[in-house]
Image 1: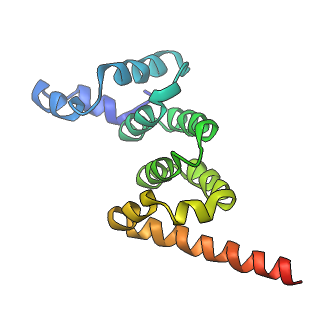
Image 2: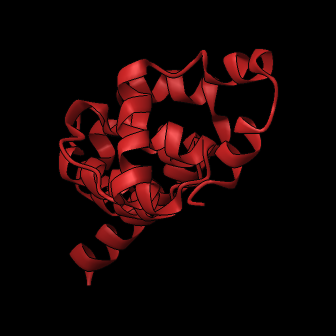
Image 3: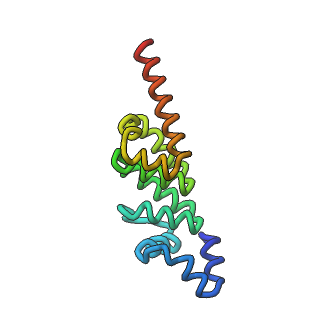
Length: 147
């Protein structure tokens, strides 16, 4: 009932099920199943990103939102590129919006980082979006300082 994707998957033959589940660790799938049965997600911790990916795959929007909230609490300068890329890839708009706000506090460090250079190669659209935001911050900063 919570996941149309899983309902459809369970009605298919075993070979197709195995193919669709092979990229999900058993510990992650266990957290997804626990959520499906209890409507709760506890102790996501370091697994929040992988659970978000599974929640997106299985179309579990509430679990996805819970994961986004967990990831906002762990967002920092070191994992920024990883988390905003995850948010962009899985259309996690709350997480992406939060990360964009956070970006304002560390924009120069991020844009000048090796991770940002890699992002330019792997997801140029997201890199361009961040670069535009960086320039808006710079322009606004100049206006405030000169005004």
